[in-house]
Figure 1 (cartoon, rainbow, N blue to C red):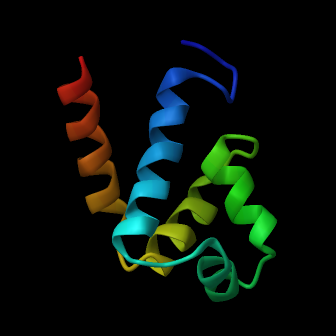
Figure 2: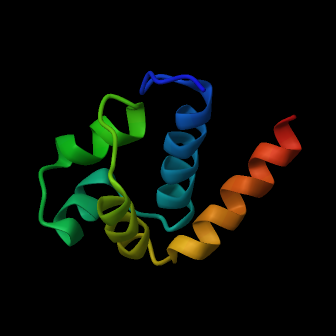
Length: 83
């Protein structure tokens, strides 16, 4: 298992978060406002410069109008389709 935050597997998480934000038609600023954090927080986790813990991930997904269980299912489906 790769330990770097820059692993291909973690990049899939970042890509899916960015995709979900765009599908929700939200800007990074809007997501940041909903989370009560600076826009740079959103930019950093979307680009893979910052890792989210499970609690932060849940909050981000909820700010995007989703649920953690659906996110994980979609992440798993995306992973299966890319292999």
